[in-house]
Image (cartoon, rainbow over all chains, first blue to last red; front, side, top):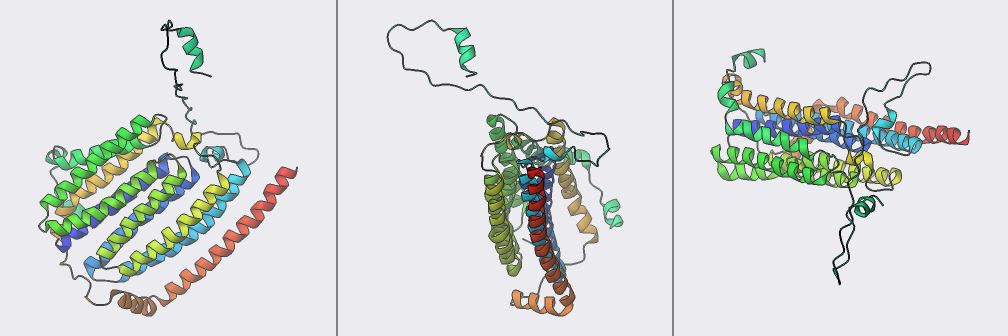
Length: 147
Length: 245
């Protein structure tokens, strides 16, 4: 691959990683998965920097990536300690537990409704057929699926 | 920079109908359906559609490349990184997310080595996969003993789930479409890194020109260490007070 082609391919992959990480950060509700999404975004940026560094023949990009790794390690240490404390306080990793965080005296404001959980109907195993086939009892099956 | 973007004339109406745009759209739609919502069937369909989109992109790039073998190696490594990232973002169980993230890191580290940055590739593996993912798994096991919880099976409501993949992937797709025209205009010819021992050169460069930066990064790491210990200690005290009340 020519240098220009290689640079373009690296930038595409870096951009894709940033896009995927951004999506995960905006959409997921688990604190740890949000943290992972941020790390994925950092990986994308690092890849682009390395590609530019090679293209321009300048090692500054690689040094910058080393700094990014150092800052990411700090962020991981402090972030995970915070997550641990938050999880101990409310016994869940859900960010929605913190969306009504506010000062005392300020009226509550919930900016996003938590989506409702839909419980799928469970399928219970049935016995093999023996003797006369019983009539299907719809009422009984209705209750059965919700045991 | 503005010269590049203004001067880059891209025929958008032709681009919309190209197979590349379809591939990006498939990738976005696949990501949209793969993000967790209650039914797993839909999630599998999402993974499949995203894989088809990614395959189309890779196939286009490899076939249009002048050196197919090196392009195939590059896109093989890149697909490890991207597939790992998609799975890390969409898996319902946070432990699987962490493991897929480590898989994605393998791809990223390999891409860095492919680019002549061996030291960065190894450092990424050691720092991320070795330290951060293990710490993450520890935190996960300390804080979440149960497996399948509702906030993992459900993401935020429908609007963010639909809008964010479309916007994010669309942004990357449009930048990709602008890129060749912009570069053909403004790019200086590549110098490339000089051959030789890349680690030794990086070390010499790092400890001469960026010595203060290295010292600052070390100080920052120490401060973060102290901060993490402080958060854990004082946080535990205040939780104890609240529960004792």
